[in-house]
Amino acid sequence: MQQPAKPLLLLDVDGPLNPYAAKPHRRPEGYQTHRVKPDSWIARHPEKPAAHVRPLRLWLNPAHGPELLALPYELVWCTTWKEEANTWISPLLGLPRLPYVDWPKMHHGDPDGLHWKTRYLTSWAAGRPFAWVDDELEPQDTEWIAANHPAPALTLCIDHRVGLQPADFATLAAWAEAVEA
Image (cartoon, rainbow, N blue to C red; front, side, top):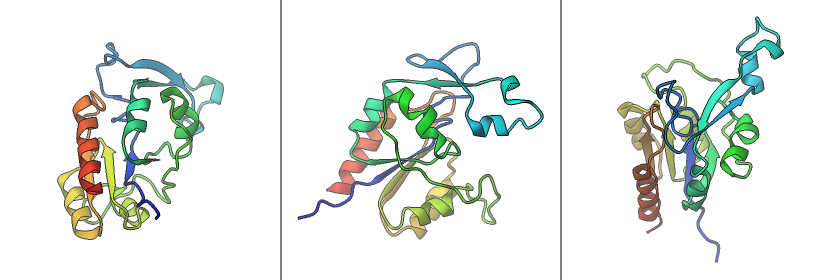
């Protein structure tokens, strides 16, 4: 007998895993500083040669990798980093290469004021249960998903000043357990 698929855990990077809005002079506890130059970062500075683009600062907590892997989900990058999350984020957290959402368009407006990811993500999930972890979620996104997605869905808005916290991991674990019951 085939096991039902695990729910998807759709992970944003900047905010939940990289608390980029923390005070710049104080790295959050448990986090390590990394300086990286992904191609997408270099492309945001077309006026400079790649060698002159300052690296992007990342704060990542290495404990988050094992904590994410311990959750009963199929992990998916749901970030503007797209495939680059597998190059720059996964190795620093001890994660394997993950599937990623390949956005056809990013940072566009929505006629109903939804987050630009909401409609596409819901379609991309193709009726599977999912938990979406992001720092830009609003109540209207949660309401729209509830009205338009046929399976259970959890939206978990993370404070981009502190990133994922133990209570967030507990919420994710409890939700997955309730979905599987």
